[in-house]
Image (tube, rainbow, N blue to C red; front, side, top):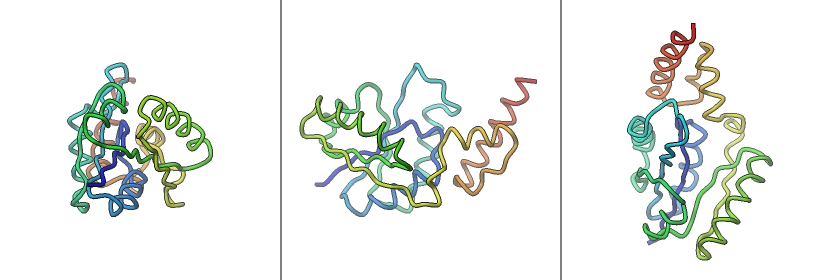
Amino acid sequence: MRKAVYPGTFDPITLGHVDVIAQVAPLFDELVVAVLHNPSKRPWFDLDERLDMIREAVLPYPHVRVDAFSGLLVDYCRSSGIECVVRGVRNHVDLQNEMAMAQMNRALYADLVTLFVPTSPEWSFVSSSLVKDVAMHGGDVSRFVTPRVADALAARAGGLANRHV
């Protein structure tokens, strides 16, 4: 069985992420979108919220499974029988950062390969951080995320803005 993992914090998932999933899902028998649970980070959405948003976003892709992990990606891959990591890249800066992580992962798990997938041009500027920033300032992010995520961002941004007044 050909299995791959697409790891990230997905805080929140964007249509750029979904674009990468759509590109690679047909290449594997199973693609796991694995959400990193990192207690040292302060995401806008808790782990369960992110998992639910991702599950809804990947419904059109029957071979995509959503999971969560903490710790090292290589340990998750070893224990899950996964030997391919999918990483979406928007530009040369992403590629440079992802290359360092891929090389470290390979040093820690020699059988692990990384597949770099360029996002489609219309998503090359979209990031979770930028989408949250736009939402925080009252901007319309509905072109960059699923309707559920747009609603969740608007609700969360409204609540955060009210706390900072």
